[in-house]
Length: 317
Image (cartoon, rainbow, N blue to C red; front, top):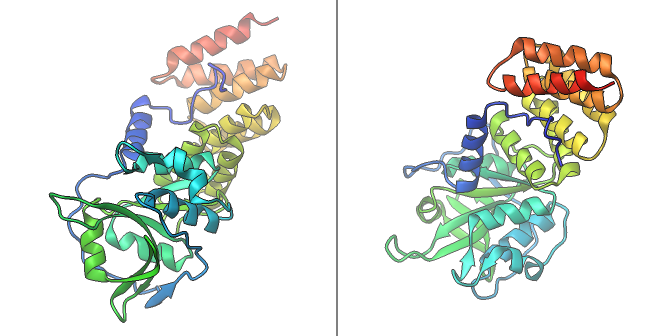
């Protein structure tokens, strides 16, 4: 568990709250109906035939869809093994939060997408997408999870692993209409060594933070390292990497991550504070004192915290 003196990489509490609420809510606000548009750099048709198929039993589309995605990511698992974690008997279905949580507990990144046209680049990159459709009416919904594994803009179709159908072909129009009811909620299950085809720094790191929050520290470390290949100066990635290494007791590794943070972001007070704590725990009081003094000098909303760290260091003999 993180020390009370190792403050999280989202230095602004409001920013952290906003990201977590957005991620856990499973929605990004109301999405207007979209028209399918294929980016010009993608092939006109693509199908991920290697995605396994687990036909669902009654009300078990959630466990079945997630088992397909996890297995394809390199973690073989059956729907039955996921049922207790994902399926809610009283609702006769699976909540989006449960799908995300079960993904994280398996050490995989749960990356959510929004927007009809967000999934074509993912499928083209080899990432199947779990989608939540309403196969009923708007006032009598029949919610259903399926796995989008292909598209064909020549025939105007989408191919799904859905229900008891291994290869369900649906028109783009029908697919878009049924998916729009969930505000185009989609879930990509990624190995931490992978990046989504279209990834924003904040969105991807929020997904990696989900692993850290779930105490999947080894997977989080890999995810933060992957992020740094795309965003090599990311303060959030350096801080998350340092915090996760610290949680596993790797003080030299955490020190290196925090040092990289202050090298690239010398005004990042949180990084100086965390570096001070790690140095102190390695018995290097003089260096720790210098880092803590820098944090206090920079100040900010966590100023009282930095002063407390400095006071603790000075009290050590």
